[in-house]
Length: 167
Image (cartoon, rainbow, N blue to C red; front, top):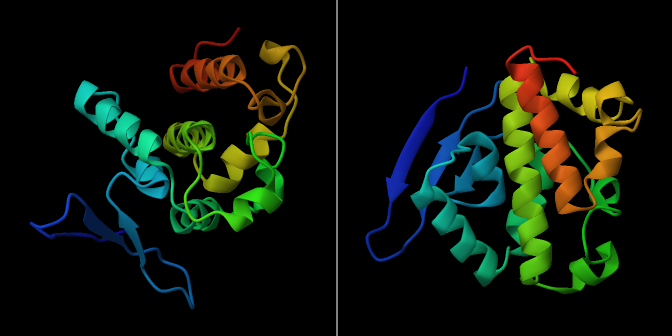
């Protein structure tokens, strides 16, 4: 069961959302509004939402927000090494990432949000990403995420699954 609390600070642009996850030994995770991990939970297609994400991409994703996304998706940085435009070693040296790296991180967050919405569990979605798909030329969807066209193909395939339209 997830419980959401919202707190806002009038002097800041950010607000926090606390999500309690029913896992033993884990503390509730606090997601900053519009951080990549927040986007996984609150994915929307409204113009205002996208404009805010564009601003966040231009400012750059903070290392702490990237680490939180990795943790929330039960992944490792190594898994995303071939997808990101910067090497993991160079990312570890920076506090805020470049526009290109930030954009890819937000694309990942949006895709994982859609995947978690469509598939029953995080594990089911991650398993699907690692399974060759006939609709994607017998390639694993995860292999295609190193380009914006690949993201588009994978996103469209998830939407087809969502609406039971198989190709």
